[in-house]
Amino acid sequence: MSVLIFVENWDGKFKKLSFELVSYGAKVAEMLNTDAVALSVGQVEANELEKLGRYGAARILSAVNDNINVFDSQAFTSIIAGFAQQENAEVVLLSNNNTGKAIAPRLSVRLKAGLAAGVSKLPLSTNPFNVYKKVYSGNAFSNVIIKTDLKILTLAQNSYEVTETAGKSVVTQVTAEWNSATVKTRVTEVQKQTGKILLTDADVVVSGGRGMKSAENWGPIVELAELLGAATACSRPVSDEGWRPHEEHTGQTGKIIAPNLYFAIGISGATQHLAGVSSSKFIVAINTDKDAPIFSAAQYGIIGDAGKVLPKLVEAVRELKGK
Image 1: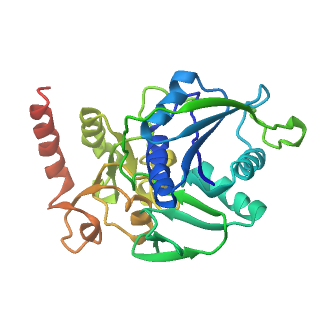
Image 2 (image 1 turned 135 degrees about the vertical axis):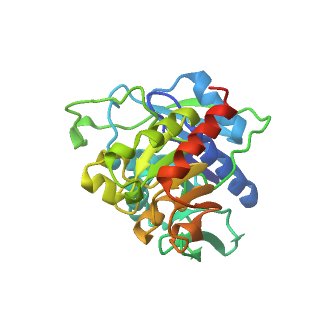
């Protein structure tokens, strides 16, 4: 028996969410009195793979094949399913990001396994296997009991503390079965964004809404983001108006993010927006309307005109950082 943890890599490197996933999986394995086995697919250097051992992976499987040069959800599902059966996994764990959301349902069908998506806490019990997850855009929670022998979980980003241990683990190179003829995904062009922090990777996000009144007022938001080493974001009305690019749109119909710190400036906090940012550890809201829904989700709030408050906030941060 084991807990199999699929750890995604980006150009051969792991990110914080990978270590968060292994930390969570190691604890679940401890609850089940079994081993946590990390599975990496694709070319990753040995020293990078060994990092997974610091977060509780008892063993690390590095599945490689010279033909793997693109992510294909069906092909990756087949690889993970094969190792889940080989390792006699009791739990298969993935991140609740775009990759995990593409693979987990396919795994559930292929392995006839119960699925709980977006869990945010350790199981409340293992017999029955009872997990906690948020529902209704984060406005409520539910306890999900999975009755199948094999369980599939996707972990909500930034919902579990990264826990480093003194442990080491053995890296084993294995062959990933990859039939290029059946892979339907083809990459025709690659465009990489440089010189800007990716919204989905950022620990701090500075976001603006319609309360900013126009695109010409966006300067202080960009300045605050630069001072804090943060990414910039916006609400849907802002991207619809063309004030900011659609890639910065956060919310139910945009990017789902979970930074450590989220500034909501001039954002009222409609349900659709909060659905995309409610997993943030801390939300700071600035709004003129004291009854704006964003204040019910925020840990810190300032009732005031963003046009007046924001420059003072930028000035305070600049002074704090000596810039």
